[in-house]
Length: 154
Image (cartoon, rainbow, N blue to C red; front, side, top):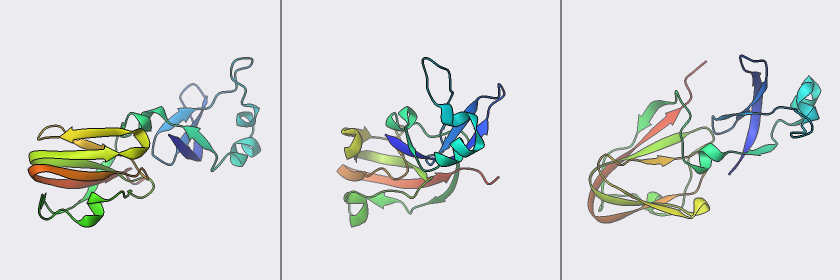
């Protein structure tokens, strides 16, 4: 899925790395003739690409960036107490990942943009990517909560 570029940094080899809104990082090298990104070699060129989107394969795999820390969690819900908003498509905010933690039973986790549905059970958590529509559906009796994660403060 495409993610906007929010900044740039250099790695230990002095190659440029785009920082994406999801928290992932992606190399943006200019290595002609195979990779043509002449804009990356100047500060003006990099600045012109802020907000432009890059494909983030890690988000497609629902891989949370390393180091994201829990900062908030919901109450524990059951099949009777799941808020209507969680049963309908909704998203987290930019940069906010979440874990759906099932304590008992089975919960279906639908991610329409990826055309995927997961059956979550105890020990099999669901990972929610920022700004990606998703919803949950109980499959019988269930108890679960959602834990929100964000990048550590600088």
